[in-house]
Image (tube, rainbow, N blue to C red):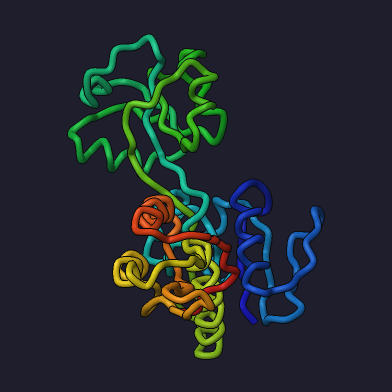
Length: 283
């Protein structure tokens, strides 16, 4: 059995549990239990503080973990990363009061900066030749300038609304982060096999989320142009229609290219374009 540690609450926890369920793994999740066991896959899920997950995995208490890259790198264990998971994306940024001038990062020389990520920030400042006084606090970092603790902060940013609400503005991106799957280095052969099975499912789910299934009708005269626009996984499926001179085309398009491609398809004569979500996609 594999032991997987995830954050016990919050957005990262919700996204992690959703991914596991989308992998076809069933389990009972309750607000008061700190662990649960899957009913159809040899997996036990531990619900822990995110800051504790890298250490638990490194020490072998948990075999796997899902954690933010920011937490993993701050803890000093980036070598545990197995693969990125594509969700819970955010950035670690420097911010200053909106009224303060900020010509460049050199403006922070000798200043006080409040952060929960002194290691990542310290390396970033050193790379830019800036020496500052770092005040490590575990929460409510945004309040530090207004109470006189620091002239700037470095904290996780998603939308930026929290900074705005506390009279701050983002001035530097220090580190970009997303959820990652991590594993302890001493897995047995059986555990490695289970990890590969889990990764296979996760990759199928992620691949499907990035893609759309598209069906359309097109005149035979435009088929070569349609095929050029829709390469598909290998090539599109083309089926003659009852109406002479027309074909039905089925293919897969990437989510971030979808609108651009559909406008081009319409321009070459495609009609009746249908777009469907893909639940799983096996490469």
